[in-house]
Image (cartoon, rainbow, N blue to C red; front, side):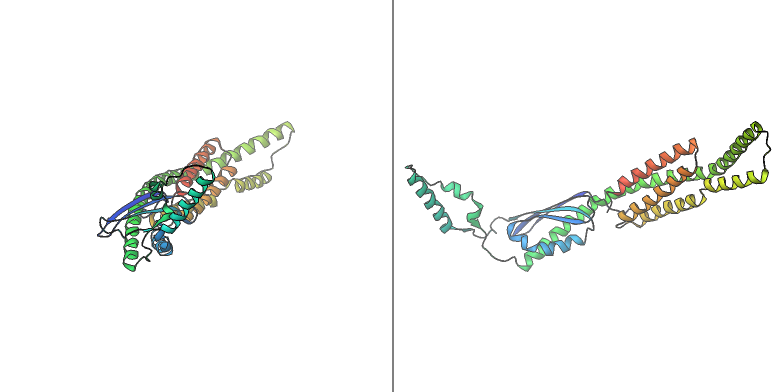
Length: 295
């Protein structure tokens, strides 16, 4: 079960070359589907479709936040474009406003430096070489992210494995106890019938009694439910061992386990087994909570 992955994880990667420094970060939480959220530099946003294909090689489900900080290496940055016409128009508007109010206007050029709208890169398209490097950087971050998710998945699977062992033991206890419950219930029915007949000075019809016992035994029979329950528990083991995107299949199989143990509890009115059934359901619920976090 070491290939199972949690949907919750964190990964990062820092790649430096002669032109750029890439810093990728990946964060993820649970989600029924793959839901990607991007935080990319403006001039890289056109690459989202290509980068999404890279992510889909590593993930199937979860809400995944991907962020990139991209910096030029020393001496490699292109000359920025400054929109002088736009800046002049803004200053002229402010000067006119000040004049109408009879106030003195002194331009603050430092304020212009802080306006992103006035600055841009050289306006060049991302070349294929840079695109390939960005894809490689993202893949490295995703590998780191998957390692973290695999560690978490391993821990979850180990915990579930121990719970399945416990439930298999309890299934054995129920199987051992079931015949005794049938006998005890049949004896109780015979005793009650005898008491009624004694009060009414009647005699027990053995054939009629046997018919009632057969009907009662059928109502108390949980053989099929226990057989299916063992099959489902074995299926859980197989899914944990198979790994991959087993989260949904594990969740479905746990629901089937709930159905069978619930029927056992309803069919067998026994104090000792009632407590066991409650404990069984608690273990299944804890497993379901774990599975919600698996891919």
